[in-house]
Image (tube, helix red, strand yellow):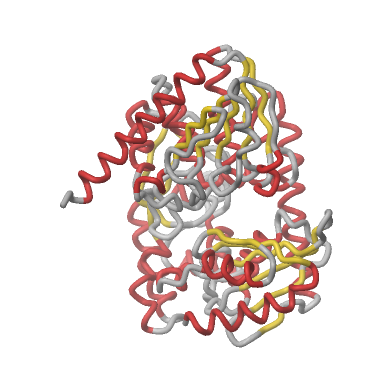
Length: 475
């Protein structure tokens, strides 16, 4: 029986054969159509593929699509590339002509057997075919980078890291794993990526430290949403809030000794707030690997992978996918003013939406679930709002938000968020939501601690009831 390392290398080798075949298809193409997903991973994947074709001087277009649109897609170019989706959808319409070729670069569970043939040639590359879990081993953008790597475009490796972080592939362990480590090593080797063990405070380069602390964690602690308390806390640890020049300090300004003191005090504080069975997980909530792009300026949101992914997500969630792709492709100077306006507007909208939910006491409580109807909240951000609300309510229960969506079949977009501590106990809410949604005539899925669903308009009450009971069963 082969050991895990040998199995991994064999899987990587088999994927390389398909990646080389995909590369050859691209080299032979005169024009290419790219379809990619609308989130950070999909936008970044589109950016990598477009950058490849730019270098090769191949005519192409990039189209951003939702999962439910895939089965109706159509092109008249001789090559179609689908990134960060396609694995779970019927793509027979795209492969209907013998003159067309299709490449799928997806990390979601596939519905086809490896080697499925159509009239048109299909090259489908997916880690799940080789026993590699696509939820953490590599992202859609990561697969696009591995394709770029076959052409020796190692300088795109940072985009693969951005995709993985944007897809939360480091969320449960605090570090990247699987094929993502190959991409990370490439980035470090060419000098475009660096990583350090650090505190997991969001806003390493842009948020004042006391502000970052006030938002820290998905469990409620005395510092939560209390900036004055955070300032006193830092002062008690002899960690200056400002430097000698009077400038407010960010996490990236702290010495290792200051970070060590902060880690140990946060560990003590959080340990007091959780039941004993969760204590062993607390260190993973506080520290992990942080990834930064060495070619970006310090004190900007582009230096840190997590902050950069927020910018790209802001573009995606406001329907400006092409703006996000242009940022990734290095055309930021031309669109900087548009980008600044969009990001500020996005942050303001999130803050206002969260405040409205709290002021209206919209959060309802069941035995195992807390939820709110986000009336008027855009479907693309209801999950973000749910995540922002989590630390203000009961972290031991997942929080679910839902909002109305119009269309041919009106319904509700549902998003669920929960503390990582619940995920560490082995509860996979993405699988749970998918199963419950299917019983209610809908569809869903996602990560263990962040997931969503689409539920028919008349079935939302049934969905909430079944989900609450299903969580009780899984506990």
